[in-house]
Length: 196
Image (cartoon, rainbow, N blue to C red; front, side):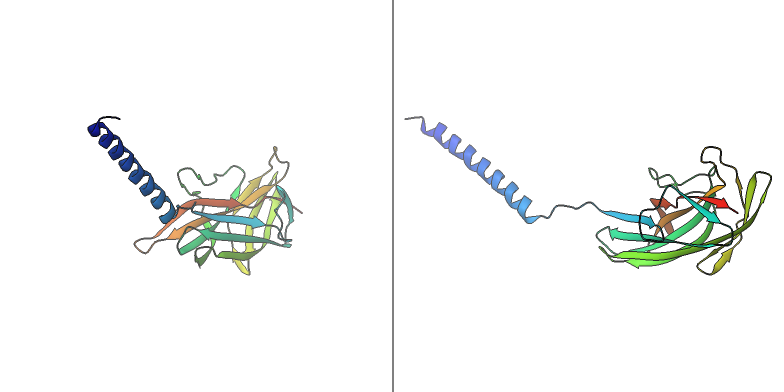
């Protein structure tokens, strides 16, 4: 038989270890794990399918795409979707540091989403403008029956072979304590190649 003091120390160490292990097990069962929180944003073509990289658009003809979003943030969110227009030389938003594009907003949509809910918006657009000297000037865009005059010049894109532009859709959140802030989440339309 061993020493009584030493046996008590071993039993005390075993008891303390058992309490620590039991506490860790109880904690891991009782406290739910934090889930990944995110907000998704997507764009679909007129058939509600993933769009092709390029899409030809004709002056004066109407086109439809669908915008969608889902809230998985764990709480209700008040949102604004900012719509911007860019040619291929203008900047896109920077996701890594939540920097929005510096381009002007040509349209916007406000909506609220509870956790787990989805939002979808039909986005109809028609462009108007003219060709001149290897460029195209977008003089007017009709978006869901509202018109805007962006005056955007599109030069011939030698990489993608066309007069290409894109819509940029930036997701902004509204906070009770202040104004809107860019979430870092954005999506763009396919390159839209203007044809006559």
